[in-house]
Each structure stands twice: as C-alpha cells, then as structure tokens.
Amino acid sequence: MTDTFNRHKALIGRAIIAFCNDTVNDFNDVLVDRIPGEEYRFEAASYVEVPEDTTSAEPFTVKYLQSISLASIPPSCLKLKIKAPIILLRNLSARDSLGNGTRMRVLGIRRTCLQVAIMDKKFNGKICLLLRINFTTRDDDLPFILQRTQFPVRLCFAMTVNKSQGQSVEQVGVDLRTSAFPHG
Image (cartoon, rainbow, N blue to C red; front, side):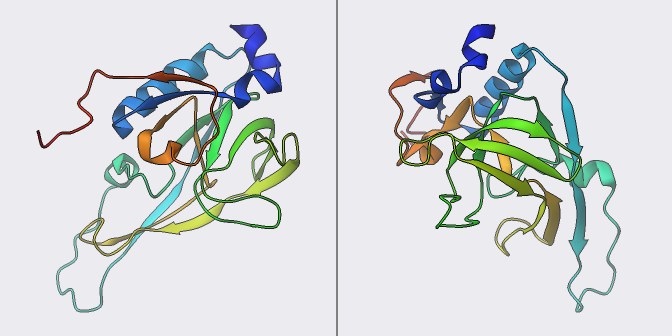
C-alpha cells in the first residue's frame, strides 16, 4: 500500500464512495494513518457571530465549536500528511481549475499554506498553493452564524455520493453498510 501513495497517478482514478459524512470521515481517518510520514494537525480558528437582537447570549465553549462538523465547512481539526489526497471545498479560481470538488494531492505542508498537485485529466500534476480562508455557515445550518478559518480542503480517500458527482473515477469502492434511501 505504501507504494501506491508514492505514485501520483495511482490516486487519480480511485475513491471510496459512501452515503454519510460520518462514514467518509471514518474511512479518511483510517487511511491517512496508514500513509508513512509525519502527521500535521491544523486547528481552525472558530468564532460565533451573535445577532444584535439577542439579549442574553451565553458564550459557546471552544470544545463545542470544534465539535461542529458540517459538509459545507472544513473540519475544525484538519489532519494531513504529505501524499494524501484532498478535495477542495470552495471555488477559488476557475482559470486555474481550483473549483469546489477538485481533487488534489498534498506535496508540501507549511503552517500558512499547502502545496498541492491537481489530480484530474486536464490539469493533472499542476502545482498550486492553498491558503487558509474564512468560512461562514448559512442561516439554516445552525441557530447562530459560525465563522471558521481553515484550509479549504478535506481528505478524500473517501467521499460522499453527492461530492463524487462529476468526478472521473475509474476504480470505485462503494460502502453499502448504510442505506442509500433512508426514507424507505
């Protein structure tokens, strides 16, 4: 398995597809641990915007804010290793093929930026730098507005069915332990 991580092309056409974000996160956590090398952890800066019309706003604990996990924002604690596949969560530059859903491979890790190589047919191997950006939840996600500053990526050994739409993947593993149709 170690040899697979050393070859950029081996990761291009492979993915595990699952129906829930929790399952995807479990797969990604297990597989990133199997990559040899140093692990880097990036803690997000998260804070809450309290509406002005709120009279008694109790502060949220850091532990609670870190526990919030939504598909629209990156994880509070991002665990990465060099050679790990990641997926972009925001449209950054259409000209450079840095759009939501672009799969990449981590080449270098610094405190303030990630050096990545794009993994797709058209821009395969193109090297880019990613910086931390601000994410804000929508009004209907939570009863408050959460702002999180983090790298705009997630691990993507595995991804949800929704995120996999539009991806070119030749070898797919599908996790069928959970139902694809939860409402019957």
